[in-house]
Image (cartoon, rainbow, N blue to C red; front, side, top):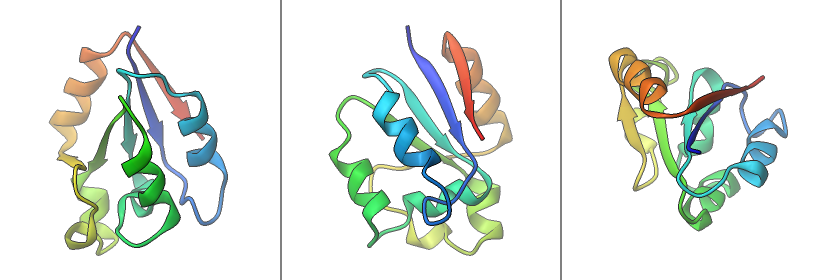
Length: 100
């Protein structure tokens, strides 16, 4: 069962991202939204955790990355989606788990 996990908290202010990664299974997708997009920026421990996560896909909501000025600082392998892409990800997965 593939799950779409959405994380909206910065990994520098909350353990939500770390907890999500600990429970996400292979075949799942983690979509970073709102302040969660900071996890996908290069040069931090969260980006290292992303590069070491096997079998998990990662995406960021493009408008949120742009609003925070990090769209040019995203780590390799991070898919950028718009709102339509967010809806498509939700439809492609069996369940959606929001990490608040």
